[in-house]
Amino acid sequence: MISPFEILFGLVLMLGLMFLGFHVATTMLVVGLLGAGAHFGMPALNALGEQLWAAGEDYLLLSIPLYILLGEILMRGGATDKMYQSLGDWLKRMPGGLLHTNIGASALFSAVSGSSVATAATIATVALPAFKNRGYDDRMVLGSIAAGASLGNLIPPGVAFIIYGSMTNTSASRLYMAGIIPGAIMTVLFLLTILAICVWKPSVAGRPEAATAWSEKWRHSIHLAGPLLVFGVVMGGIYSGWATVTESAAIGVIVCLPIAAAYGKLNIKMLHECFRSTIRLTSMTALILVAALFLNFVLSMLGVPQALATLIKSLDVSPIALLWALAIMYLILGIALETMPMMVGTLPVVFPITQAAGIDPVFFGVFMVLMCEISLISPPIGMTLYVIQGVRGEGTINEVFQGTLPFFVAMVVMTGILIHFPSIATFLPNLMFGN
Image (cartoon, rainbow, N blue to C red; front, side, top):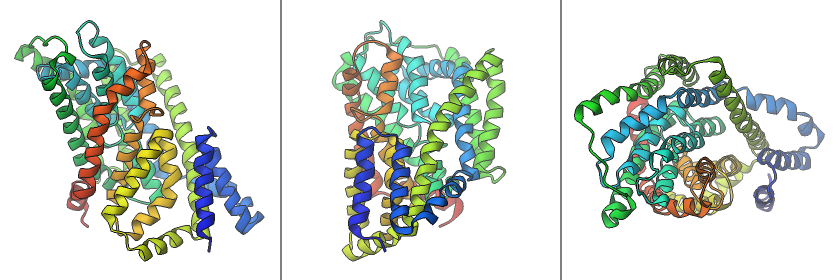
């Protein structure tokens, strides 16, 4: 049995190498190889190739590139531009005007793309030109886009849920269902945050937006049909039992093609750009994931889950206290680590602890994804902040940092709600699939 000192040393070494800028996959492989070599010698090292192959052949992982491709086709096919304009017709008369549209469009795009970074890039590209010369406070505009992008993984189908499910052997279907209510509550909290700020300080919302005729609103609403159709096909296929998570993702890609064709954007060049972007994002994700799964395999051989479970039972820590401790830890890690390293780097150690404390793995999946989403808008490393600034191409990144602060507070509030009312995550999965 491995000693607690060795567990701590391995965790500190891994996080320390990440802080120093080493590639995440390399870091986890190094730690895994050191542990395997020190305790099991050459036989364990010789099995590296076999373990990496076994880690990467999970059928569920095939859905990752499919969901990324789905979002790429919708974005480059012109559906998101029209979707944003249509939502703007309905939301712009609220206090806060088009700021609410950023949240609504992000929530709807998140329901088909499954990626926060893709949501940030897409909505920023569409939204930023719409705010030119309208008098909106730049910080609120940027902050609302960043906040909306953080819904990308929380609202199903999120790629982060697939990764969590693969690493913990938790049902992706249950995880998707578990994310619906928390995702909806998070969306409402963002809208209320904008509403409160704009009522308190109306100047941040610029000039009042002109009303759109009801006939125009209904006519433009046809542009919401595409994303809603894709969401309905993907999620309906999963929960009707007609298709698996991976098969539903493939069907979703097929449904996106005629939508892009309807906007006149479907051509070889557009598809080539979609494929290239999908390959780039998938390769990065897959490399990190197989390294994490190998590390998970080594930790299991070393008896780390059993050691941690024994420790937690001896401490008699309540689940709520443990979750708050983990929340604080992830808030601190989110300042210095990106989302993927934070999840895959800590999950092999943290997940056994939560299981020993009796925490539902589906609930913890939602909690874990929420913590990762907070890290995406946490300065100075938050990836979506730099994506938005890159699309913006002017001003300073500090304006993006400042704009996210009210929404960061809203996400911390959401964390408290989730911890103290876990049924908001477990109610739908238990209703659909039973306890």
